[in-house]
Image (cartoon, rainbow, N blue to C red):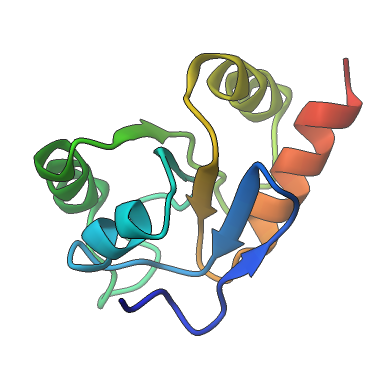
Length: 115
């Protein structure tokens, strides 16, 4: 099993990391995660796999996925509300990723603390 080196659990329900590869989706599922949230917009880096590739791997692996990109302009209220909705809708535990895991961590914190 190969999770990203920067993988970290925030709590029992959510873990985060930097960019994942389509090949790592099966490993994320094997680690017990039931859903994935992508907080990284497409095109941030030339070597970054587009969301559609990760989504296709998630569908193939039978794991739910949601796209809530946080752009370089920063986190929006809509991002927070979409994350809150995803947290309500998606089966846990959830694996979220962005470039480094920071946006995913901050977004999760805002979503659970802005009730």
